[in-house]
Amino acid sequence: MARLPDPLSTLSPDARRVYDKITAKRGQMKGGPFASLMHHPALAEKVGDLGEYLRFGGTLPGDIREMAILITARSVSQAYEWVAHARIARTEKLPDDVIERIRTRGDLSTIPARYARAARVVQHVLAYESIPQGLQDEVKADLGMPGLIELVTLAGQYRLIAGVLFAFDSPLPEGTPPPF
Image (cartoon, rainbow, N blue to C red; front, side, top):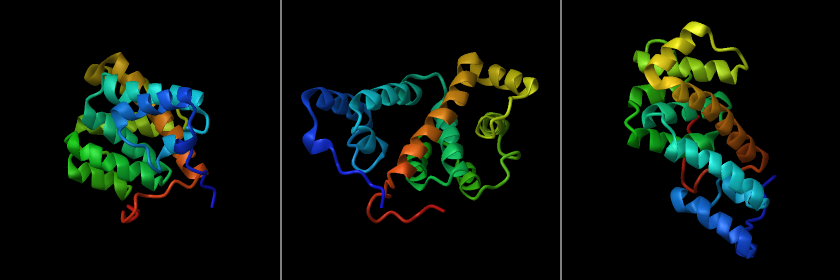
């Protein structure tokens, strides 16, 4: 088992400041990626700042943002990330049928166009492929240039988070069944 010990009881005052900053928007960090990242508070703060901006300060509509996160989580079968964000996706009004198609790796080409275009962008990023110009133009028309850039960055950010979760064997919250 690659789990790290819980660092929260031994945080220095500076590390406690970082912890408080991160949990101010996200709530407690028991078991998630930041519990591991807090072993390096300065890095945790940087990762947290980008995540906070993308989740709480960015330009993307919440349903599109959460769909991008779910696609990223499912692409690497990251259960913790999936469980955390499927709940948020429902709160942000991402349709249940879209969530289920992502979970089961179903066909996303037939979901509503605004979702399908954004999904294709994320899929290109996750496959390390260039985004075709026509698709870029369509997504810029839907979400603006900042939205396009945020989609690309979200895929990278949540792949990073998935890596931390996998590396340190972050468990699902107690009593939560695996989603896939």
